[in-house]
Length: 423
Image 1 (tube, rainbow, N blue to C red):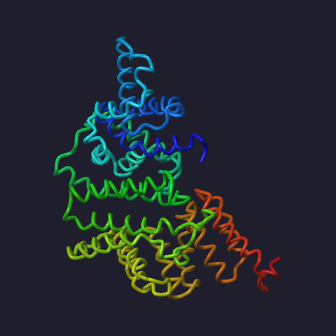
Image 2 (cartoon, rainbow, N blue to C red; image 1 turned 45 degrees about the vertical axis):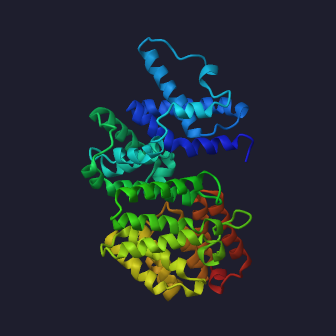
Image 3 (spheres, one colour; image 1 turned 60 degrees about the vertical axis):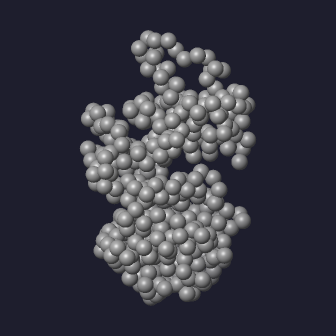
């Protein structure tokens, strides 16, 4: 990391709390975003000299709030703020700054804001896109990837959502109990997508991507406190815990991806797994299965297998079939194809994967899995084409490095007679 790299990580990690508090304070999306950006600029200017504040989020909220007030005052031709040296934390006065905030509550502003963004006045896709952009600071490109749409289409969704919020005067108040229950599914989806972004972007167990995963788990726990008897929220929390429990084993010493079956399972977090398994058992007793519970049950079967060969692929296949019925999706079918390949071989799995090509043409994992299946079948030329496409769609260095390794293996293998004839 560069000398100032820690500042970028601190700013991105603090964004959810800071944006939540600034939105609650200003009740205006554009003003809150501008205030946060101004606070970030001041942080980049001052933190290299003063060092990190004790609580970066509190610092950003304080400076951003005053910056926003300053803008309102300028617009009203009122007195501007005092000079920078009187505002900035130049004398290690973090405690004083934190005390001047309603600090006991600002960390939970994120969950409040998620419920606000899920206002039914907005279409569901706009609700989620707006929350991911405003709350978590994900780029339009990252959000578009999560929805499997183009950046231009996602930019339009977010712009329309902001315009609707401004035109409709949607309040930034915490929804009441009835409204929270009605918006629960949308908020759960937002949390799930925040985790997925951190999980897919992670290049190792450290850094901002891991922070996104931790933040999603924290929000899911808060949600579970609001809805302690909701089995789907138990399932969501358990799923995130199980996925994150493997963080230390997902990459080797060089940062390269390690597939699930090759991971050192001694590195998996047993406390996370134990908590998640107990939560799944509790959720199942409600006898109201849902998509998150099924995904958590699949992850639990992996977690319970002490060795890869002990994995119950038949049960995993059955669970994916149930998930396909509850939540039909080409991505679900793609994941089920992995289980089918373990049970019936690569040819059967490839037959499932091929029809998904049109809908998943821009999806890294589609081309990666297809390339792997073609490689197993000895169709090296086709596998190479699929791997080349996967590299073009890779979202981080680890994904690209893994595919390059597969290409290196292909180059080292002798071509089949049929492929030699094609040449």
